[in-house]
Amino acid sequence: MHDRLRNQSVICALAVASSAVAATLARAGETTVDRPPKLLVIITGESNSGGYALNSEATREEVSARPAVQILDNDALVFRPLDIGTNNLLGHTGLKPTETHGFELELANRAERLPKGRLPVYLVKTGQGGSRIAEWAAEGRYFQTFRDRVAAAKRLLADEEVRPVILFSLGINDAIAGTPLEEWRPAVEEHLGRMRREVGGEPPIVMTRFMARYAAYNAAIEEICRKVPCTASVETLDAPLRDANHWNYAGMKLVTGRMLDVVADLGLMP
Image 1 (cartoon, one colour):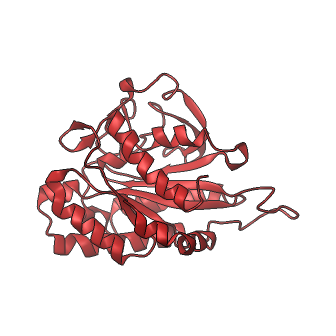
Image 2 (cartoon, one colour; image 1 turned 120 degrees about the vertical axis):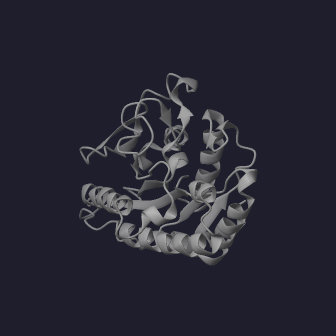
């Protein structure tokens, strides 16, 4: 599923370590042994990146405050404990902030199993429902929003040693709209590079593939991952659905778990 990135894990880990986000203002006398780096997860893309999985299907604990994950409040631009149904979908086009969730639920489940010294996990959500790759152009409002949120996180974490990773899911709306793959693929590759430049360094990027009806886009995603260094994709064909284009609660947990397995392979989430 992600053998290519696993084989490059040392290279990717070194790239992450060189990130401009990392350890810029470490205090005197501290070491990475005493203060291990924290994980910074940036989620972006179309509606599945925001999440269409119903909160009503989650457990009470899963939709309670989850301080192991500190999410950027997209209104106030400060970090707060993740609270699904309250602050996990602020400023996401097309989704109500109180009803659904995405990758963040299973991220919190995994984070709560980490050693206390690796907590909190920091989270920035920048997705936009219904979006196509053309709407993420450098001069467009969606990418400007991405830039603003990432910049806010970097300011807030200037005294922290963090290791960023990008979780990216985009392509279904382009497939529905009929965006030619010969246009979509290079535009996505360019977008991946722009996101990395904003974050700093060479953060790993983990992409989702999609449902069987989007086989051509799945093949294009795999081609991108073969071409772009430190990039991987995960299988989703067996992920349960809420509707034809969105994963449900169980499906979202399955897909997220596979993405986080890639992150774990890099030593970023022990």
